[in-house]
Length: 362
Length: 153
Image 1 (tube, one colour):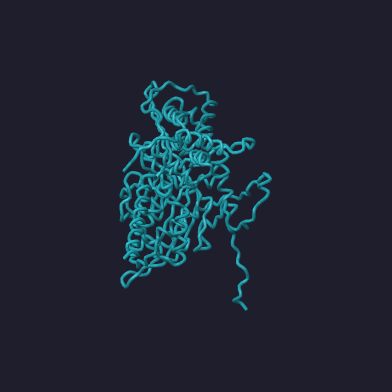
Image 2 (tube, each protein chain N blue to C red):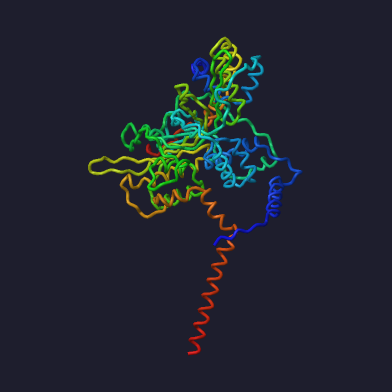
């Protein structure tokens, strides 16, 4: 039974007014501008763009401010906003080989053409709190060097040309789109990659970590990790050609994994792939490990029953907006549902008590 | 600077350059160029929407949908019939309008002014931004050296 009740409007209005005040915090402290969030909390902005699945740094900064820094709430705001935008088209697939890299490392080859470029990384820092930042000290300018004229081709290309890694099945089939049709299982790799690219970083991190610890093990090496800007091209039908409509920064991870092979097929390494909006190598590596684990069927591997191999489990739980929506709805009024359960428990207890009294009497 | 020539010399090139340009920079150059905002009719008034960005599995395999980006587009016609089109990143309708006007003006007598006063400075600024990033990246390139090996002993 559904019973409509009214009430609480004033309490809700006042709660939201207090939320606004709490969001602002101590008014004697300068308020944050969106530019400050965009420039100085750039990795938070990147995460909101990646999991909100909308590349717009100013909107992500606004969402972070409005959500008081609650990342999932901010992602929720972006997902909600995104539904109001008309879809203007689908880009051509971005060419990550032409990425203007600011970071590019390979854990499989030391001497790769183009070199190992560390970029603005946390790696090799000592993770000691820097009290200079608390004192708002000036930051020295980063050193510069003559830019390497040699391009940085994909590292896996070398394995590919030698034939020791599985080639990617190319093709230009129109990929399914989770924003247009609900997920159906089994999902093909294109749908899985879309779901993983916008999936929760923490969930994918834990799943990928579980696979490294032995739950669906597949021995990954990071063949290449690259971060940089790529152009986005869109075909404009009324002009009859494609134009660049902008640039996005992406993090890409290609893993080299343990091999397949048989009596007829010589041994070959296999691949996992991660591609994420913004700078997020943790997410890109995790995505590549999970992508690879989910390919067990196509690669003729054993289903070990590991969570990371279970497509339905992974894809149904990777979206933090779906997850938080369902999780948090249980705090909203369930008075009638609960009343019926409470009545049931009371009746069961009455019946049990009556039965034991009868037994005692006999 | 073949990249810059291409960015200015072809319609595809300048449309891309105008789309990638920071909106504020384009507005400033537009004001400084002394080009009057020419009268125009909208073929399609500025509209903000989303374009789904695609990637490829394994960087070279089958396409997949990565996520959307905000884009504002418009199309207009000048009194003399020239048409200008724009699809620019972000949600700035004035940016899209200026890009479409520049596209239209590039197809007539004002082309030299637009090229010299707007496109060339935009291309130079973009090249400078890219070069600065590339130089910082180059400074973080690892130079390996081999420690003395034990195999001689």
